[in-house]
Length: 72
Image: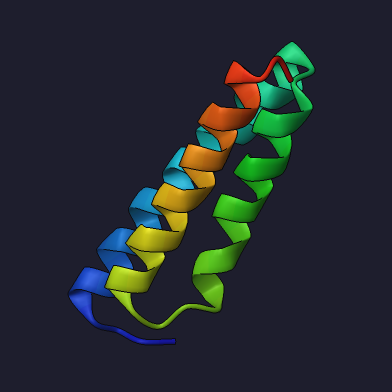
């Protein structure tokens, strides 16, 4: 685990968004929100760069937005 302040802050931000999506998906029984929330909470443990963490997080949220617009 890297103790770079940018990486720690980005990890906290991404995991917080993931936790909120997870709770929302669980309460509303929305599978896409639940799945993306779990992934957003877990994947920062394996990424060492804040930039890559932000890019992957943005891609996952974009995937969620696309899934919701398609009617999931």
